[in-house]
Amino acid sequence: MAIITNLWNRIIEWFEDRQSRAALIRGFNRSAKEAFVHGEVPVLMEASVSRGDPSYRHMYSKMLDSGFRIKAYAGRQLSKQDIMAIGATILANDTLVRRMVVLGWDTLQVHCDVGNYGCQWRLYEMIMIGQQNNR
Amino acid sequence: MVDTLAVSSQSGHSGINVWMIVAFVELGIIILLLLVRGKQDNAKMEAKKRVLQEGDIDMQNIVTSAFNAEPIYKELIVKCHPDRYAPDEAKMAIADELSSRITKSKHDLKALAALRQEAEEKLNI
Image 1 (tube, each protein chain N blue to C red):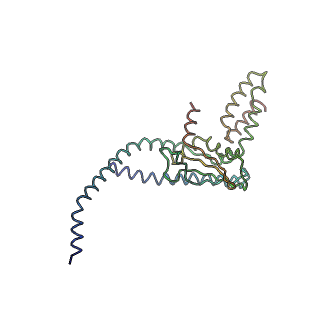
Image 2: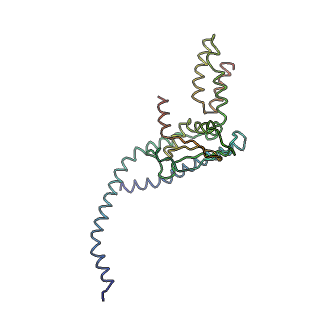
């Protein structure tokens, strides 16, 4: 009986996770679009799911789509500082990072539409750093 | 002449017991693994529930902070530097406290806007 309950919980959890992940990405994209349309930010950003870095895996990591990728449509190669600023803003929000980790993301990737330069961060490590800073 | 149907039914009948045993052993292993994993998952699930109930995330603030927080941070950290209020001990203490909060909120536009207002009131910047 316990096995059936576990399996059932697992199925429900899978659907809930998918819903929460989609809601998070939709929320980010909606906010990014609004901010761009209202002229609050100079670059249109779009979040999507990608293959994460296998070496960044943790116990909540999803099997295939463990990367949270932000693509900045700037029409030019963004500087490293700009890309780092986008990443740092995400990582500075502890609640968001914790939520991303438990929803199965392990890698944050930021890159722009031009060129092949980008940055990626290990999310789980950022939680550990945050905990150390709070102590 | 060989009756192929009879031969195939014989071979199927003779092999079924072995495969049945193998299947039962596999089922047993799967059940055991599920039971062990189920116990491990409970703690994981509890932690996950706690994190998901932490509250709403202000995405708008995150997105706008990515490009707009840094100039405000740079401006505030200069204006609230304790050395600028050197003769006044009370103001130096306020500036010191504000500076540390500004550094902590480096990437949070809303928090920086609130800190700017606070600095204007307390330090007349």
